[in-house]
Length: 366
Ligand SMILES: [Zn+2]
Ligand SMILES: [Zn+2]
Ligand SMILES: [Zn+2]
Ligand SMILES: [Zn+2]
Image 1 (cartoon, rainbow, N blue to C red):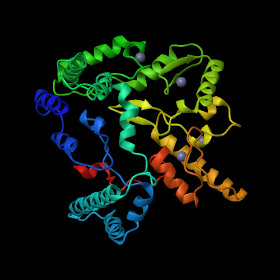
Image 2 (cartoon, rainbow, N blue to C red; image 1 turned 60 degrees about the vertical axis):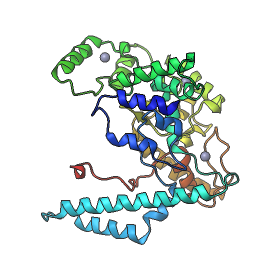
Image 3 (cartoon, rainbow, N blue to C red; image 1 turned 60 degrees about the horizontal axis):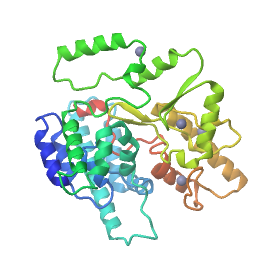
């Protein structure tokens, strides 16, 4: 049934609306990694990556280091052919990485499951973290797996959702808690929207601006107002906010496992949090649950806090443990480095400053 619906949906899609590659990506077999449900709904899955420890090993491999050296040599040089050579080197790097990822996936699939549980799957959790932004996909993710005929009520509702999904121009229309009507100056936005839609029909980008609505709504309240990105609720008053944060801290299962700020479809799904602050009872509740909407400041804070945490543990000669409060994470780590790998894989994807293997300066794409 799923395939039936899926082909239908594909046919209904207007040509050229989406990257043709996404279709193939959905059907690419993979043993670990992509979540089957998430990928059926065209979720833009990040390129599959290696666990942090493997990643570091790989980045220190002779082949990789060689490419990096060549790239460094080219940097700052203005020879006519250097952009071309740079592009070639990046392509080489990408191929090398993909090979390594495949090798790792293969090794995973041959390993008996059980005892050595594989690292948490980032892709699966991305879908789980953003599905609330997309009501149709959210429902489909369950309904498609509950029904076996199209004529059943669940089947029909799935079909309706599928059609609605195909007719949508943007992936995320708005974030719960930041509904467009929360903007006090909505007339202006509406005017702008109108001007935009008449000027070009090809532009399918949303004019929805979560950041504006967030600050606009905050501004319109005289006293303190804050949106809890965990439960999409607005809290008014500082004391109330403190209480609210305490409520989350009292129920660790309401705290995020993955603590990086996550933007999906141009909309902030979850704010970033600091795993270390979250675990520190000497801080005030609102400090422990400080929300970072932007990746840069989040990274800076978490990295600095990580260094401090590791230093204190080393000075005290205490065992190296995962600080996350809600999780019963694996016992004790051998070194700060292993703790870092765990944090990267499980709680704070790329909080370290090193850029990802596949990252390429913007201008290189042209
Ligand atoms: Zn406004
Ligand atoms: Zn909350
Ligand atoms: Zn912190
Ligand atoms: Zn952990």
